[in-house]
Image (tube, rainbow, N blue to C red; front, side, top):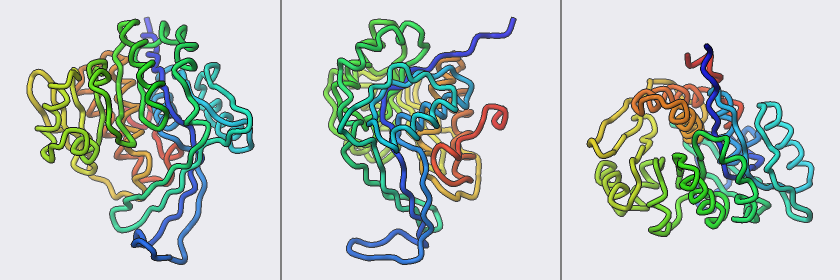
Length: 299
């Protein structure tokens, strides 16, 4: 009998990304001419939902967008990925999310600014209204581009339904102690881990997350791969070597694939390894969502 597909429930943001690729990132006050402009569908929540869908999961997305042209286009793109949008809140007189992104340098690093939008209106009530979706899910995944009240409501509902709650604490902000205790797996990058724990050593940062109540930490290290810290100790997972073109969305790709692996009940080492392969491949292509691989490419 063919195994059933896992279901990943994503609570988060949806944006349209306006990207300028430069020969290098500009310094403060500097204007660089000649960059290439492209427009993509993005937002950390939507990105992670697309990544999970392409990883093979049934994906449910809870978020908010405006009734404007950008919002309609973003929803159409998510529907093409067969993502369940029945819990998506539509706002009148509030713009849909946008992000301004600069990509540059040999390493193709990026700078990102996100405008206030419908994403900032997602409430705890919107999340609790989606309670029936939690009963269908195998894992719940959230980030911090939506209000903390909505994230906390999702974490509590995940606990009530005995579901692993995965938190990608990005963009980084101060978090209440009670939220850490609801987290099964925290997925920061090395910079976010250091800011949240005041520990520059990723291993020590991971141990701090465990002391605060998280069951495990998976800290992404860019081209160096990822670090797992849990009750059994720590383990480094190297990333495949690739020539990056655009690193935008790589962390979201990793999170969506990791969530799918956990929902499939893969051993965590296997889930991390597969997520690293997917994220590494995504950096060889432009854009966030357009760069995410399909399951067949990784298998």
